[in-house]
Image 1 (cartoon, one colour):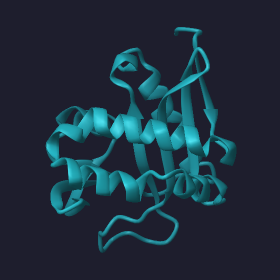
Image 2 (cartoon, helix red, strand yellow):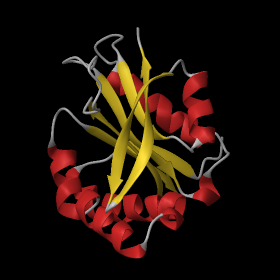
Image 3 (cartoon, one colour):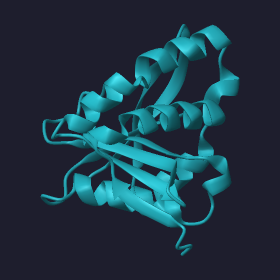
Image 4 (spheres, helix red, strand yellow):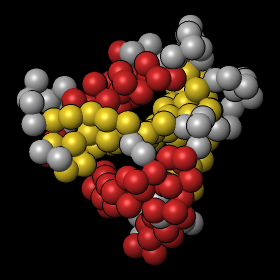
Length: 173
């Protein structure tokens, strides 16, 4: 593994960094799919620094930053499951975000980020885990499938006025 990379748990001091990185990775990955006004409305709601600070301060949530030479290039977030599925139970966990900048993908660090997040989610023992993934993100679906996640449902994910078809994936202990 490349020793320029480090993985660490984010703190409230990282709110501005996380806000900028989350915005950049979402735009890089999905920005081309949306009208500019819808994309901006989503970004303004989902990724402002104040919202990231609240998440980072909450004891039920955890965020990791992947850094290359001290610069944040990837992140993952986890917490209680908030997906709209009738079988979600209290105590279930969710991988809420997992993004790396494109130029930092394919070197194994995305997998390490994923493993760190799952280890945190299962720190008190195995439990049901959930992930929401865009229906057209086949690479992510294959990746999660290799880790035991299976499709359990669908829902609409709003990005401004656009509604994306999302798959709900689940892994049971």
